[in-house]
Length: 188
Figure (cartoon, rainbow, N blue to C red):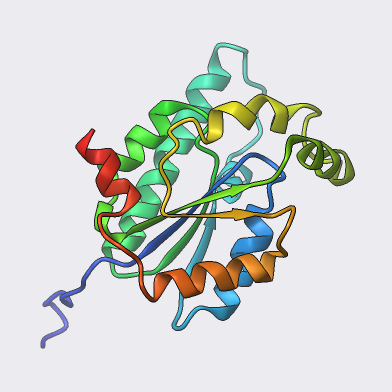
């Protein structure tokens, strides 16, 4: 193969962790990356928000900038997976358009959608302990994040540690059924 011929690749797996703020997605992603076979990338949406410069935005500008950030994040994940990379996505599907955008972009057979949840009182306790999230953010997201209701697997981070959840997901990957949650949602 010459240096000019592109390598033939198949799409990488996207392990899509969806949950409210403070649900434990990032801790779970770190543990999961440590026990999976082969290399993978942890792509948290918070990292994309952190990359954005911090100019003063008017209330009218903020939603536009946030939406573009989320859309860019989705496309970056899709591009990394299309190049054959395995990805652990740390996400918050609190608005229906975010899920629709991902359904349009990701190869549905290559996505494992994971529900990451815990009871609201525990989310509020974690949010307060963190101190770096607006009070009430998890409560605002609580009913919206999982409204679509379709998952491949779920983890309750109030009853299992991040490492225990990571093992649950890793074991699920060995025998994951078809159609996937993304395949089922694409049909509807």
